[in-house]
Picture 1 (cartoon, rainbow, N blue to C red):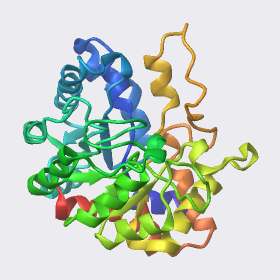
Picture 2: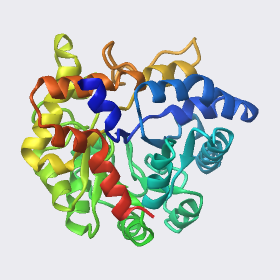
Picture 3: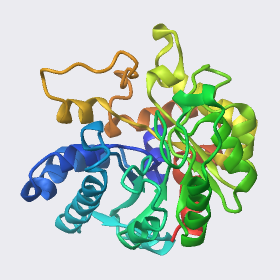
Picture 4: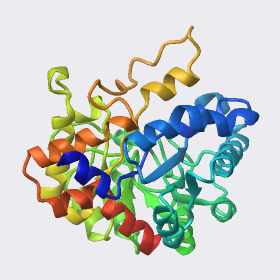
Amino acid sequence: MSLDLHHRAVVADAHNDLLMAVAARPPKRWGSFFRDRWLPQLREGSIDIQVLPVFIDDQYRPEGALRQTLRMIECAHVLAEANAEHVALCTDGADIDEALAERRIALVLALESAPGIDASVELFATLFRLGVRIASIAHWGRTPLADGSREDATGSRLTAPGVQALREMERLGMLFDISHLGASGVSHVLELATRPLIATHSCARALRDHHRNLTDDQIRGVAGTGGVVCVNFVPDFLTDDESKVSVDRVVDHIEHVISVAGADHVGLGSDFLREVVADVTPPCCENDEDDPQFDFADLAGPADMPRVTETLLRRGLPEEDILKVLGGNMRRLMSKNMG
């Protein structure tokens, strides 16, 4: 029953950094590496819509951030063209509908913290022309646009260019992503937003008191815009008790967001990182002690996504709500507000 429902559903993942791993290869291998390493996992997990974040490692910041941003966007176009029978790079709802009808995976480009833009807000239009349809404006720390959640003690709202960025993204039809944004920044965005917002990979702070997670008021705020909160699978954001790390804990957060915002405003944002980090981190190096644990055995990659459906069914969620959580809400949000 669970596999049948999972395969019938439109399954959308709002955050998988696989593009980092593909772009780390020589350009001539981009298409084949994606086809050999990632496409089988996406197919096994029945992923229908995959958001591809463009995340820029510290080694490229600040001077090389725009160059690496463009390189990763080019990588996405190349891998899509090289695997056109399996995937399609989509820029609006019609593109997504066409890809799904043809049983291709709909790929959507996103910027994570947008370091390549800095304060040059006019570049959002440039990157929009290249296919980017979702963007956030901060990561862990401070940017010219806003502060990330690790800087919550500053109480900082969006900067003037940050406000301009929000307005420009709304004008273009680019979804504004509040994941990683500091608490005061989220409040500021909720005051200003005139279009639906998205949190591509955030958990509930009521269940895990971590600065990366959203409070109930913030979750209600996103829902109030017509947006979607996509629950993250990273263990450190799910619980501070390692013994409780499981698919059930992911569903705890999903159920909490439903209880706060309703079933129309919840999605999935996996943030599968272990394989990506292994692919891009030199063997000599260690991760920063503040970096989160990446994933866990029950949800180690896209192929494990049916376990979420199985757990939602076991918990007794109505099938209609499960279909919304798995991807129905994301598909609606993108179809109405992207591009």
